[in-house]
Amino acid sequence: MAMEELLRKISLRAARMSASERISRIRELAVSEEDAKFIEDHFPELYREAFPPVTSGVGRSSVSGRPHRLAAKQL
Image (cartoon, rainbow, N blue to C red):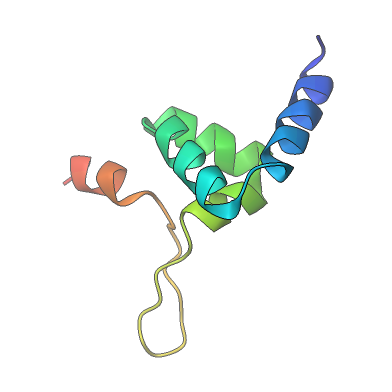
């Protein structure tokens, strides 16, 4: 199966899930920095849904948008 076809099928499957199920599944899949980067690159809307940017309270948002567990591991 070609990569484009696989990505399309994953997108279709995600579209059939409820929002809470999508968020849960994306968070489960993004367990490593590499996995999170793959999801962010190929499914940016799903990534943003699962890991919304953190707002600073002044109307600006965090640039990273990384999952909190991955950010904590880097400290």
